[in-house]
Image 1 (spheres, rainbow, N blue to C red):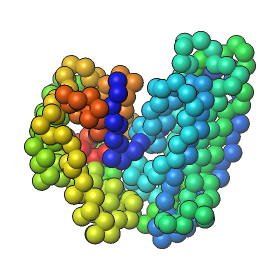
Image 2: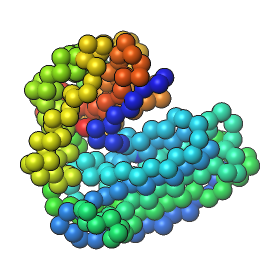
Image 3: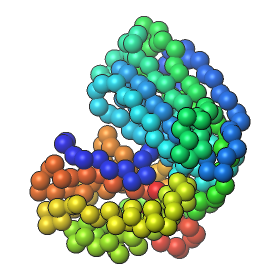
Amino acid sequence: MNCKQIYIIFFLMLIGSFGCSGKSKTTEIRKGTRTSQPVYELVIEAQGCYLEVYVNDVPVYFNYNIGATVLRMPINNFIPKSGGQKVSFKMISVDGKPFSTNTYASLTINEYPKGETQQKKPVFSYQTSPFEPENEGSFSIENAFETNIPYQLIDWRQGVDLMKEDPKIIRKEIEEIYRDYTEAFKNADLSKYKKLAKWRQKNTFVSMYYTQDQRTEVEKSYVDGIQNQKVKLFPLENYKLVFYGNGKLAGLQKKNEAPGIYIDSENKDDAFLEYILLYRKSKNAPLEVIL
């Protein structure tokens, strides 16, 4: 599907081994540098596989396209507070066959002071070793890294365990939010959009050290440039209910896509995906967009 993918907070999950015979090597640097505004940047390189990457059991990157992957992106908004964090990834064979000898994945997490990219220091680094000829065409691993940050976000990890709730009720609640999202885009309703995404945006602004002027400028762009009259709701039956963040996050997800709402359009070139995950702060509280 030809669509413009927008991940407002661009986004690692499956823990344990999938029986891959490929050997791997790892280098981990446990101490991060202490800066007043540290940025944590994930650098991904991969070839010959589909790839899923997670931080704290939250998906930050999905790639189901054939071809090499080279990507770097900040992950501060997936780090609620200082201390130990988890990073994991899953490699999947493109054709269901064993990985080739050229298949590999490399992940690095760098830390640097905001605006000072030349001062990058790795806090985590991992690269797979060549896979044996006989392998199962899948591989996953989880590791840890340390962060030192001056903020504390609204922490979804302190929310309700949504996997203990009725999935039908959760899905119904999320579908209603999806309808509201679609209407906000259709009507270019900035105030409605800001209300729906207020906690996510607050976390993003705090974690990326935005000034008030920068926040105002970003907010203006939320519903700008969308062909509003052509926006329509993508059929909800095409999504599946998913849980992340060790059950504290829920969302709807299309096959081979990130969790979030697909904003459909009569013109397919104008369609896009907005990353969305929700949490419930406490029992009987409504689901709210947090990522």
